[in-house]
Image (cartoon, rainbow, N blue to C red; front, side):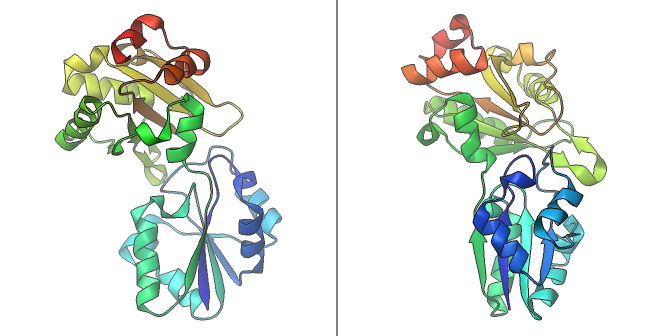
Length: 258
């Protein structure tokens, strides 16, 4: 009677660690969710062949509204594995489920996987300890005032901001860097000249990273989702070099961030 929260990583089933693979193979029941993030290269049939088990995909209602009822019921009968995109506890949904298991006396463990919050540092060359609070930009019209406040506060402190873009697979609605830039500039036209770093399909073979002003992103196609956007703060000379080498940043855009 136990539950293992297993991170799938960023792109496809090959992102599983060996430990995660072994744990899932030993489980009596294997569940997965794919609504907290999108894995562009994941093939469910390949995943099941790799594990040698059927994978039951749970939706938002089952995990949030029903508090992970299928997982709890299966855990009362044996070992359970829950496969999640990225790193398991970066989504509050999974923390809530784990707390619910603890209240029922059901033990659980975490097997970590690569996450966008750490991988974005490698993709852009921006240093991890210089990121401030992350925010999520919703698909709905407009931009929350709290998002703008957080981004400005981070920037004033010289910190980078990771803006996660809303993903709703069940509704086929995915926010892109181009749409995000347009929403931000519409909410505050002074942001048009802010530099951003757009990242698409992080961790995949066709990962795409580009640094430019937000106004330029409005006409830039980043291809398939998932996307995320970084607003850099004050830059270290190594970060400047990395943005130029890996993200196509222009000297003129970087000058104000030195």
